[in-house]
Length: 500
Image (cartoon, rainbow, N blue to C red):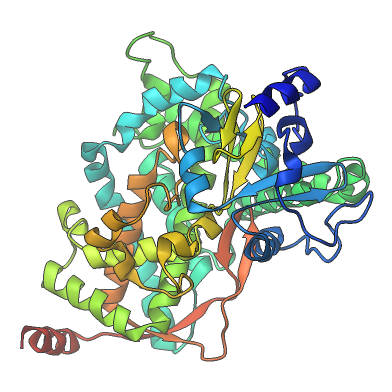
């Protein structure tokens, strides 16, 4: 640790505020490999694709190993993805969430919301304590009928497409489903997404804001105002629309002109005080929390469902096992009860495996709480941070075996999970700042997959190859499926075959 102390003295022991380039907080930065094609001034940007920075980093990670660095002009970043290093950086006593890169670029939108709050901002703990009961088992059971209602609207749309012999736009329809689910269950608001041929303007604005934040990640700050002038104007308009939409939702609830009184998330934000301090969320923070839930609560779930449906359509043996479980566990129930969803253990493993290969939130950042060493080899000063590449952690052969690119839900059988190192599966982040809505998302996604697989056969486009759209979150690009309607007779024959 002597080197750490020397580095702290050299740096004044304090990491600068604002963006913290790696050279400020990593005294032995030269121990960390970087791409061999680094050139003066511009760093490692030659050959990089600004539209797919994550996939670029995946390729660099495969070459350089479990810890590496990249430099873009004056800014240098440290990336971590090895199983051992990820376990170390998950230690809450030494590391905390770092709000940086694209997450910090979202602060003009959601400020100190749950996802984007800095660790020192009091509103994070206040909002977390007030809203956590909104994800209890009783609360989840209350959301279940609303999830079913939105799923009926999806299947009505898919029935029409199936009768017409037309393909369905999987990411588009999963986005509509997930937006309606979180908006209705959490805030009593209906966007009418399935009555529209084009995405709701809220979705268009949200996608624009995420894309703008992604571009801010890869364009140097000195020239960004010039290169992004037009995009910045569109981003400001998108932000104004999001704020206006949410203000209308909140005002309608306050005035009693919208649905309320169910104890949903919005009721909690408006009416519940902190149990210990009596403090309440401010009007501005309520707006930020609502936008946080609407954006984060539907982007990630829609991506997870889209990737799962892609893999199910390409792996008929997995689809058959999932469908057999659904038919066996749910039987002839027209719709499953809340407690029936958790019984779909194999379907849940399908989701887990889809999120392993393509975690829709593909990275998270961690910063050192004090002077420490990562992995016993890399000294860090207080505030020094690294970006954990979840998407590569989920592909580390040390944790996942010799063929980590293969889609195999059996990786999540209980015995297999117990045999793996800790902290190698992180689709919802880690520690105290992990996703508060994880159980909501998993219940919704498992329920919807069960309903869709029981109702439809999935026919992929044989010419399609998975393409990934990056907008801070990940989504399949251009994924469509043809549908066949399963008949009750077909279900009965499959059940008889399984029984035999």
